Length: 254
Ligand SMILES: Cc1cc2nc3c(=O)[nH]c(=O)nc-3n(C[C@H](O)[C@H](O)[C@H](O)COP(=O)(O)O)c2cc1C
Image (cartoon, rainbow, N blue to C red; front, side):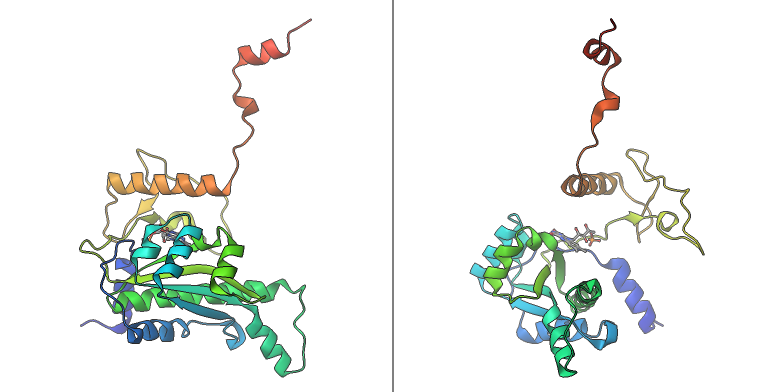
């Protein structure tokens, strides 16, 4: 017999970001179900310091797709929900008590981002359970000013990510591999020793709900990591890699 817990675990094991959608529309009732589930997420002090902007208009979606660097799925999905951290909610709640929010308090922003992200995850799971495909799009933060203008966001409201919602196209995405828990889970204290990240072709640190991780999945993982790390980092100065001969020529002995 399947219990509720099994169902949630199965849903999580099968979940995968979906980037290919049919043209079928998603009606308001379904979107409401998704957002009703989103707000069931835990939220510090029950503040709910987030807001959702439901975008259906193709022109608005085209604008958001452009901000996200031309991501086609933003336009392909009939609904794009922008999840915002909303510090105005905290301001309003403080005002109810005749209090002013301290602008230096970083926790107001941190709490809003955490809570909005949790709501986003609940929305994702709800969408999946309703047979919808979804993918989070953080690319809308590429140009925060443009997002503010397009969505009419007031001061104190930040677009964190969007959520594409639609009917998955014929081929459902398969769950992507994850790092083995040996790399991510520590017991009692953080263990600084085992840090062997997988490197192709003999990657060992990846795991998948289905068991085996195929070669093409490893390659896709590697390509994605390469792209992501390039966007977040700079190359280390390659001084130490200079050929010895070149270094000697640069500093000839007297
Ligand atoms: C905060 C956040 C931002 C993301 N932004 C994008 C994005 O801009 N475009 C995209 O296609 N996927 C985006 N994703 C989805 C990830 O690429 C995806 O979750 C990851 O590759 C793992 O695949 P899976 O969700 O199918 O397991 C984002 C995910 C998160 C959590």
